[in-house]
Image (cartoon, rainbow, N blue to C red; front, side, top):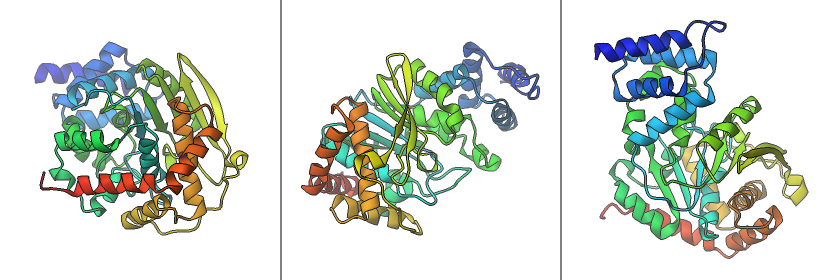
Length: 349
């Protein structure tokens, strides 16, 4: 323990020498730091200091990759579902519709499996999370075994991962993160655990200044294709009331794509809503049942079409929109959602 702490202290000094003196850790050094943090060899004080120092310095691609690799090693992961991992911030939403939830059932009906994951809300936003929404459906997530979740995913095409149970090493850091009450390196890393070995990734960011760094990281992690989205509240959801900046990443290259809903005659004004977990679920069900507000329905259609395009299931966004409109209007997405909801809430199995 003492030896490990001394090793970690040495690494901590390198990243905590101030804005001018701090240096990025090498990949091997970052692997050592991640190991010490995730195994509890580093003390809470050391971990907190490391998180704050990294926030001041800003994490390098090598550091982020090392933490992702170590977190993946210690997490429970399924064999590949050949689908898409939809990853937004674990601190949830405060003032926007959780379009990615409804979108997932449209994608699954179109033949693209989806992985969603989340946990009880975290700093700094402390908003409504997928965990809150799914709990509202009567699902006891603490009782949902990994085997049961995998069976439901096999049957419905939608996997939900309660990250606190599938990645206990990250969950062990929750108290420290709540006390710091700020974004840490784990805010990025936890979204990239890739619980189902997905070849496709949709990843939300808040600031466009991280586009280059994140596109390099996604390439280092060997996703086949990815879309990095400067989306609603830093999420993976495209805006419907204005253009969205994205980076499309494929085969070692990345390009800026601006997705403008006006081009597809989908732009709409979003109504003012006081969001709660129950309201999120209500609006989701309205959209899937063909009774949603045009803004929210259009947002789901645009996000679904873009994601089908990223996964090369369609030859363009217009083609994707045609497919997604048919899926929603036929009631097929709603039926898939109802089957998933019933399976998730069935605690007798």
